[in-house]
Image (cartoon, rainbow, N blue to C red):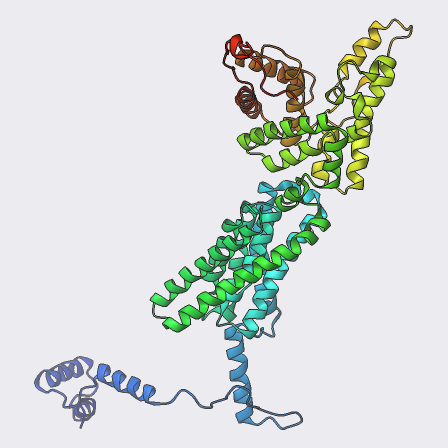
Length: 537
């Protein structure tokens, strides 16, 4: 008999059943003098229940890959229905299926859209000019789509190998076409979008996307030779290898699996580098972006336009080479594109090949054809080298950023020498100032602004005698002040600090070009000179 049964029977034998106080005293006395023989043990009961639960096999059915659950036009039995429901739940867990509800479809789309939107907002801060070129925006969108599509393909066919996701390709293209900052941001954003997909929940996809994208963006910051691609492949492969080793050390993979992932990652870098080299010319043609590889090709002296300039206007060619050295050093000093500055200088006066004899650097002593022309005609010929240069640039299909050096290095400056000659000629009517001004536009980039100053500096130093470092600095200061006062640098994104750095670099470079020669005794056939230019353009 249990204790509860005993108390119930004791109450029935109570002499005064209507007394509540008596009942309470009776129960208290019975509980004090009697102990139950059966006591419930809840802890042991729960332990045995758990043991029984674990002993039951949770797998009711085993469905092997490729096994048919139910065929077409067959009756769906209760067993088949259970299997179909289980299959749907597993596909949802893996991300290979979507919920039938609208929220189940819209939720992931909204999540990924918000993450991708972060990139486009950051692009507004770090490279605003991209939004002014719809083709560049379309290219970025295409590269994003390629990375996401590649991730989707890997998730379907090889989800266990996330090192094959082609994020390095997108990072390489963005770095070469835009810059490393844009590429780095894009790599991180795409890594999140691809890596958080449910299908990759059992693999370190997010980790390898970050490793591949960041290593590719960092390794290809400078691409000026095809040999640089080998370095890129090695760095991407090293990044994947280090990542695979890190995962392998956690015990997730065997040594063989770790080496396989590292090898696949290196192959990903190799294919990405090859695709980058193959598709860069197409991307440049579609977006009008000029990469360093194209600039290096344009700097080849054997190119038809440069060869023609060197043969038909050798003085202009020498002037362009001297300017290129100045401009490249100054641009690198202020953080601009030194290679673009050099190549732009090569082509900035290419229009002079039409009438090379009318420009002083190509004239011989005592033979100046301007002596036979009036000032206005001379100014027209001088002005024409800008329009002639643009026509030659168009025929040679020079990129816009290079062709811009032709008109912008003069801006809207006045052709001072011939304007003064026209005013002093006393021919009657006063000369029109518009006939003695270059057509412009003014410099719109740091590189063309530096070229404008360098052009005037190099030309002025060719006519100065007894050059000293003090005279060089004074001449450069005068030219810079003149350009600033005339407003020629107003449209260029260059600061006063950068202008000061340009001046310092010009002084350093030009002082090195002109050195103090030793006075040799006349008895030895030497020439006495205290300070003479070592090179004259």
